[in-house]
Length: 321
Image (cartoon, rainbow, N blue to C red; front, top):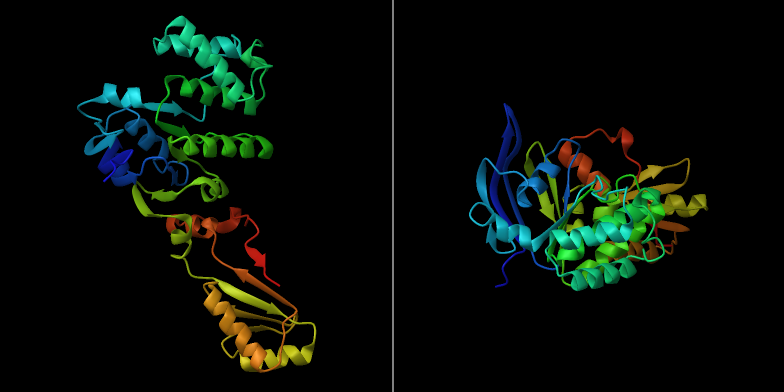
């Protein structure tokens, strides 16, 4: 079997009497995006710092790139790249000079460093700005330069700690495309984010960290199935059709004001077909059918106990008819 890019077992970390990580287990397959979600203070950045050898764990074991964190941290560092939520870009020098500085830190020969810098500046659409001070770059440009600098050493595993924090929607979507391209090239990405839509869009697997432990992990779809609340909503314009449907679908919740019925459902094709077949057999047709399935926001709030007053659903209802 292929060795996981990252494998952690029982990671623990405390600061004084505050336990930040309390026995965290993680497995990240090679060439995938793994997203670690959690509220502020949940321990996401601490996990990244431990796995990237910036700090040591108080307990547990971990291998990154097939190397043991405790016994071979130098080999781990050689295999990874790290981009934090706060840019490592030096604003006093140009983008190209930032890249060449990173090449020097990786002990690349001068000609190779210049070639790698030029290739990455082109790849990240920074050629026109290469000779300008990085302080003049927009937030999105600085973040692209930051990741380009991380790639100078050709790491196969990259830790991205909230890489799109503070970016506008366009820059955030550009960053998503960069991450997808990295993974297509075989890179493994360990992503922490507070944007649930980001994890939903990018991650092959997601873990939710809460109070120092993993509350749940799996694919986005697997996590969504953990949370009840899915339903199908049927709306009618003809009161007679509405009354007839309510008679046929006795398990539905009625909304007499809007002539709508709500039926508990996981949203599967079989469940939808059953509902429509029951209506068809009675000669009734709904004017509108929408399916609601729990999204990652619902999962996050259910698993972390966070208040939903800040919940802003991302189009939770998908129109089917």
